[in-house]
Image 1 (cartoon, rainbow, N blue to C red):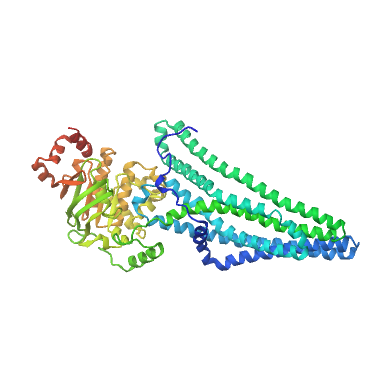
Image 2: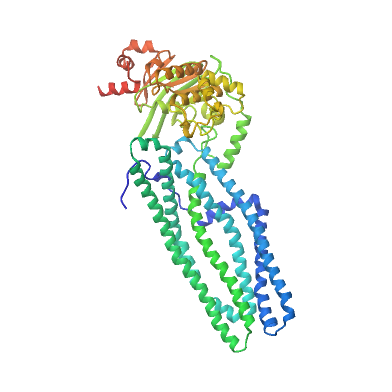
Amino acid sequence: MSAHHGFGAHTDPSFKSQPRSTSEVVRRVGVYLLPYKLMALGTVSFALLSLAAAFTYPKLTQHVIDEVITKKNAESLAPVMGLLIGAFFLRELFTGIRIRLNNELEQKVILDIRRDVYARLQRLPVGWFDQRASGDLMTRVIEDVNSMERLLIDGTEQGTVAVLSIVGVLTILFCTNPLLAGVALLPLPILIGGALWYTLTAHKRYRVQRQAASAMNALLMDNLQGIRQIKSFGRERHEDARFGARAEDLRQGTLTVMRAWSIYSPAMAFASSLGIGLVLWFGGTQVLAGKMTVGELVQFLLYLGLFYEPIGRLHGLNQMLQSARAASERVFDIMDATEENHRVGDDVRSLNSNAEAGMRSAESSPRLVTSSPTVGTRGEVRYENVGFQYSPDRVVLKAISLHARPGQMTALVGPTGAGKSTLVNLLPAFYQATSGRVFIDGEDTRELPLETLREQISVVAQEPFLFNGTIRENILYGRLDASDADLHAAAKAANCHDFITRLSDGYDARVGERGVKLSVGEKQRVSIARALLKNAPILVLDEATASVDTQTEKLIQEALERLMAGRTSFVIAHRLSTIRNADQILVLRHGEIVERGTHEELLATDGLYAKLARIQNTTFIEESFEKLAAN
């Protein structure tokens, strides 16, 4: 198979599933049955009742052959057949109840597992997602959770019933005819050897299959989100080839699993049939010798069928177990990932204790500030010798110190890669400083609950993200309990009320995936309205007026000025015109602040910023810095 190169060709190799033992998988998955012990017990109980009803069939058949047909006892036929039909009815009745309980239990457990996985994803740090493909994560939350649940529900119920059925039937067989029972067990070494071979070799095959499915889903999601770019560059055939390669990997992985099963399953079925054949051979000789009746032989064969049927079911469960084990490993990779600490400086805690502590602290801790920002009383920010590095060989920030007084605007300028975005991402603790401290209103952010910290900060990104819902839902995301009056006030302040009311559905108009139905300027104003509604005292703004027309830029700029009023603002600047009135301008280069001051003060120093100002009449700041660096 030829290699196909491109974005997202493979999932991140750092996110490979860690091998786990079968016992660990079963133990951890089994925890999800504890809240539903009675329902699980009911499922197994009705399965056993159905099995008990089935056990009457061979005995009644033997009675019909030996006592009714052979002795021509016609008057006994109707009562015996009534009992037989009644046994069949009870078997199917109990089976129906079992299926109903099993389905209810299955969906409850799936819901619990899926919610736990999603809750864990919500508590993982932003940096964790930077290394993972969204499609791969979706595969784990949806498909792998389903496979994991099958081990828990079907494995528990069918496994328990199969084992009890085998023990029960063996007991009956040995009580009925010990010699024939011994003959029936002759193929048992073949069955055990086959099961061991499949168990010891299947896990790797299933793991490769699950990884191939994730790689294909990751590429699919990436391409669906980038469909406009694919079409604009005319890369449909290229993407067809890439998707075909991922689909081929999945096909090959699935075929590898199926080939092994195509050998294993028929071989086990043959071993079972061999046992039946041997019993029929030796049993036939006993009938011919007058040592047992035809009815007794038929009864023994029917019971033998009830013996080999659960053995075949156990082989199927073995296949399910290997698939579920591979899927469970991928789910546990998420569950075991180090979650975002409840407080920025906390040691890592376990999932349950951390979640419970987080809820208690969030409820009991006072808000850092009130919801109405007022200049000079809240929103003071200080960085003291802050450093950050992704790895020892990738240092992004070095000894950053700054002081932003309440209500001040701080502009960050510098070339691409200078550390501007990283610096502001430390404020809401999207990343944690590797050295130094960050203070808000004199409190070390490491000592603040994350929920409390982030309530005080609004972020307006350069590329606004809108959820696939209505405009109303997207604005209300800033404050879910806001009234219509507050909603409309925020929209008017963000200069988006007019265009919203012109839409046929108004505030209930759907924006499409990532807001695709709105223009860039409209999306930006909706995101500003969302930030206004949140009404946090600190604002992080990655200015987004570079890719819009002059009229839209004016509307956005007016909205931004209203948003920044009375708030401590950090602005990553792309246009010089937007930062002339900043209270302080920080010039970053190679992760360090090389200049700071107001616009006039920096011009007077005739440094890097001054040179930038002289050449940046029509270009963006970052482009100007690149030109300076090139010169």
